[in-house]
Length: 216
Image (cartoon, rainbow, N blue to C red; front, side):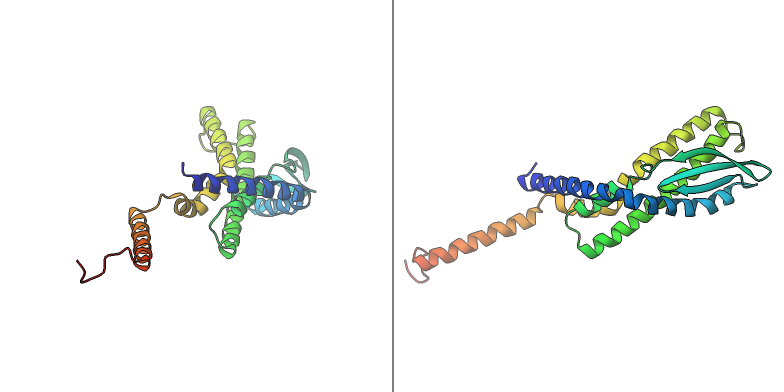
């Protein structure tokens, strides 16, 4: 690995760790806002996939609680997502901040797109995991979903939940990393050598070491 590549990766890792630590310290203040955003988007999605509607979402501080309607207007707690369930947005932001070779305007745009994508992934996970839990407990059914298929879907949903921040970052920064880490083009190297030889020729001419025209 070239020394310049090692230095580039080293700076990226250092800036990522520093940014991650700074943003993590702000999470107690950011977590509640993020959880409320997830809850606000999950409520209509639950109403869309359920008939009749049986799920109630409530956000308490930074914790997202899922209640199930049990009849006669009564609800019972079913599960909850703690204040660090959606913490992945912090390392995602740190990755964008640490990525080299992006202007700040484009960086902010990609951060916005990335966070928006992660919000949608988190909302989808909340809805999918709750609905699959209902099926696993025999509370509802999804077509002819077998127990084995149910297990597979739960694993797939969990993997997508864990991998989504990295996948989003890779998709949005792949081109930048490819440019920064690509080896120099051979033509560029040749051009650099020609420039160096031209510089040496000028120097030799100035010193009088270069053979003059018309002399033997």
